Length: 161
Image (cartoon, rainbow, N blue to C red):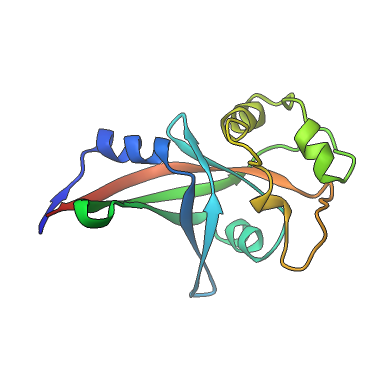
């Protein structure tokens, strides 16, 4: 197996093609890692979520880490780690509280939120992972949020056989 460092361009290329990553945050010296759906653009990671443990922890300590990988089976693997800073994007107009409201949502007025929405909306059902909690019905409240992780450092490795 040959393991080598990835260039920044290679790391960005991987972030552009993947949607699932593992977000790590820390609160009171305790780590928490959770899978998220995301979109990459403008040197940032964008996401959509309901309030919960992940959001509370990122609000308490905005220093986060995201790990994204592509396991190519017998051909090798690639893995990128992003160190960044969480920020909640300004609220837009409230929705009607239903999943259908998210599906019908037009681009928000705020330019950062509009950009996040445009990147996330390029994928079918982009809102679904962030709009559901275990055991909940398929509805959301006006408390959902868009967020950005500003990339402070990025690194990656890849292996091939």
